[in-house]
Image (cartoon, rainbow, N blue to C red; front, side, top):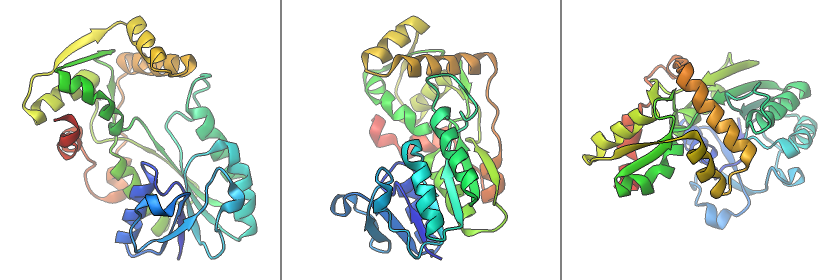
Length: 274
């Protein structure tokens, strides 16, 4: 069985490569620049891009880990079908079904629709918020003050390694066809709670400064984030303030082990925040 990993140098795809190789599965890793990719020598590194489906090396592939790219997904489906590929595991998101104009769910939903309609034996992975998003807090943590809105908004952030482990598991075991897995971390934790966890892990004081929605909005728009996306993000925090998220338990069920806690993730990424 050869598995094509698209987005093999991406935040999740790179980890999927490692997980599959560790399981002893032949991996064809897709990248636009093999020289810079620094992929493991055990992987078959191939040149190509989902952005240009005609470059995809599909011959001899049994299954595909599909990174989300709505713009070209239908062409991918057409070519993969012609190549005789039956199995596709697509990275999606828990925002599917959210029709807000700025929602990431619009792109994820388009990918799911195309893959489903193409008739593959599909599995969709829908993780929620990534723990890695808080790497952006590093400058604030270095300065000793974390300023953000909705400090008590409670979500269930997930480690990218857990997403990759689930992807590798469903690609290499039976019984996951036509399944949609909503993935979360093992705990519900607020933004303020994440800052307090970083305090504990780093052994330093980090003051929490609560921004108003307007202040946060102005900051993100100033960083160049599209206004519709900013409003969608802030609406999500407001929703998880009113209705705190609850862990789904899917990672633990599929992998037979606990998911990674935010404290464990913070310890593993200590160098970024120190």
